[in-house]
Structures are given as structure tokens and as C-alpha cells.
Length: 227
Image (cartoon, helix red, strand yellow):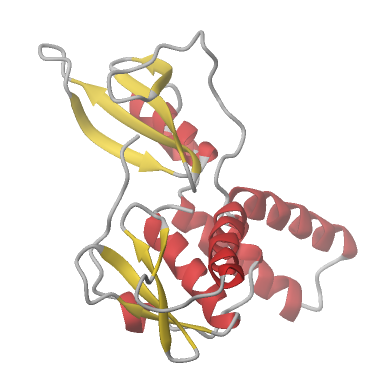
């Protein structure tokens, strides 16, 4: 999960599979309007919460299903559920906890009610101490990689970007299906590589969904949370 948009895509696809109809919200306060049997039953807010429509009668189990789907989707998207800090870590003014700092670059983390632990990397201005070039991550591995690259701890050329991993994954899947000349030993190696990539990007395990996210939300402005 690289961004909230990745989550929205998976979440709305899952809702569509469960019989809901998801539309871009007509209100600037919400991301999406959620319909069930042609009735507007709930909204999904910019604070990543499900809000029941107060003007219609909605069964509690329907709202629970939407909330459970959101949580299940977030878990499958590869968020971090294990707290990466302790009381010994420095707590920053914005509520985040500092995990590491090197060469003017900081790796911090903050708990979120839906996305578990959200990470950020940023540079600190030497004079003012203000954050600069802040990046948000919902995946612990990618946050750690970004920190290592930005701080100079590792050579960026030795790491794969997420997009490169996706391309590599697609190529390996195609090879494992279509190439009949691959030896059993090589095929087992391919499976191990695919497993490693899918551990980093869990949504690659998911099958294609019928919900057309880009058609409905393609123009939605990206919204990120603090961390």
C-alpha cells in the first residue's frame, strides 16, 4: 500500500463485491457515498471513517459490514499492525515517535485508527528545525528503504522500487505460467521470489476486481494523513 488511493481502490472494489454501489461523494466533506439497494446508507469521510446516513434507517449489521470490510482491506493492503516504538522513543510535537535519525533525515511513526502505524521520512532544516520533503508510508519496509536511501545508509542502486517490484512480479508470473521449458528447480526459485515480493506488496495476491475505481475516482485529489 503506497497511498490512501491504493486503499480506496481495494476497499471500494471489495464493497462492490458485497453488493454495495460506491460513488464519488457530492459533498466536499466525504470521499465516497455508499449505496445499498439504491439507498444511500453511509459516507466514507476524509478522516477514513464510515458515517451512517442519519436520514434513513440502516441496519447496524450493514454498517458493521462496511467497517469490517475497511479493516480487512487495510490489513490485506500490507499495513503495519505491530507497534514499532516503545516509551523509550522520543515523542515529537505532532504526536509521532522518532524511530531513527541519521545524516539529517528522520524516520518517524504515528498510530492511525484504520491504517495501523503510519510512517514518515523527512529532512530537518538545520537552522529552524522544520520538516522538509516529508514522505508518508503505510508499509514499514518501504519506509525503512526510503530512510536508508535518503540518509545515505545504503546505495539506492542496490534496491528495487515498488514499481520495479510490480513489473518483476508480473514478468515472473507470466514466465511461470507460459514458459514450459523452465526446470523444476528454477520454477521453485521463481515461486520463492514471488512470495518475497508478495510479502512486501500483499495486494499482488489479490485477484482482479470488477469495480472500476479509475472511472469513479480517477480525478480524486490525493489525501494523506499526518504522521
